[in-house]
Length: 385
Image (tube, rainbow, N blue to C red; front, side, top):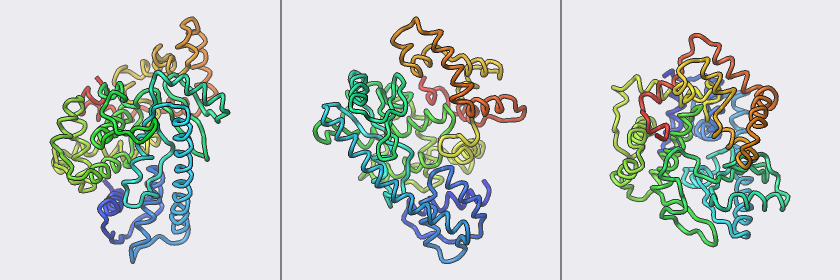
């Protein structure tokens, strides 16, 4: 890990631990780039404001300061959006659970600084279609609709309404059968341990796709610190029950290594340096969701074994994928040819930039797919098998 990355992790660790950071000479251009691709620039800006020496000057002093103001504005907009969709779901008697960032942000040392791109809410899968129709009939701005998720926009904020849990783990196959906390009317919440498990499973899903960033690891840290008298043995037992023990222990140990999270170290990363490098390549180099380094899901490499097979899988995905992407095909199996054409058209036009990045990635001869290597290290459980 280079010195800028080390300083980046150090500043985040100080924030999470409530410690005053010490200034260092650094490349503020690179520090800003890292904080920007991980969507934690407001946190880094707050930390840099508190140091006495080696502060950013000129352009980078300005951009860091701007991120602080932007974070407060975003926090207010997301609060309005969350309250609005909560009222809509309650008023129409739809059961729902808010998950991840919109809940976790309140556990951060400065909650306004925990930025996020959208709001995630899970609804009863039996009510999903009715919710979609009710949104349409009430003229909500619908950004996209696939068989398992509808995305709407409120107060300049995207809200993802999920029919199913956004994880590859059977523990969450029916979230409303779990031991939930009633929040009044039709709103529910996960227990603290289930929410921590959900975040780990969600991070694992992203690792099997295009990647996950450091903010997801920070979420694990603040969730653990937010549980009074955290019972680590109880949580590990839950991870064993849900078949994600190895991945959970690797992530808990990494959080301990980076942020001094109050948990045990199941893996000594001072010794397991190869695994540490894989995590660094994926969690730090790839940005929030791996977009900086990957255009192709790592599992495609894992399942296909050759670049040509990866290309075929991208151009002609299986029917289950098409059903998720194009709901009309899920409702009518005769529309398979239309879905195939729709997929190719999206690649050529609507998603041309992503498609080009994927082709560029496949044409490279020397690229090491670090996610693929990480998946091999963590085993089948990260794939949801």
